[in-house]
Image 1: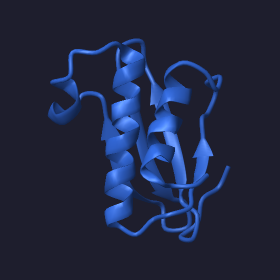
Image 2 (image 1 turned 90 degrees about the horizontal axis):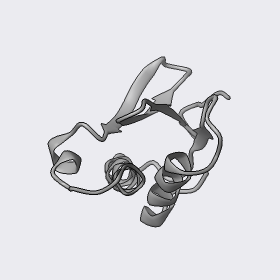
Image 3 (image 1 turned 135 degrees about the vertical axis):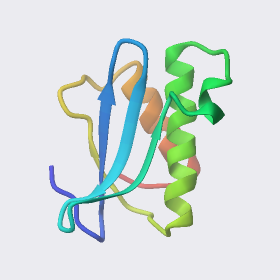
Image 4 (image 1 turned 45 degrees about the horizontal axis):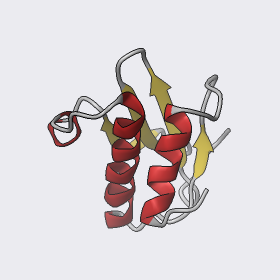
Length: 99
């Protein structure tokens, strides 16, 4: 997986309790936007981990839209595409971003 300025890469890290996601421009080596379930905006929701991942995806999508990012490359890493990873991706797509 490799992202550029036209299609940045979404990188996901999932621990047992939290989920962290960031949008990276690999050509410049910079993180454009990030979000996690540890933020106060997300942490105040008393939901299960899958629902929190969906909220993290929506928050990341809103931040990306402010930077005029529309198309992305989804790098799920070593994780299977189900559960929290799938919920995160659906949250990002719900905002209107494509990958």
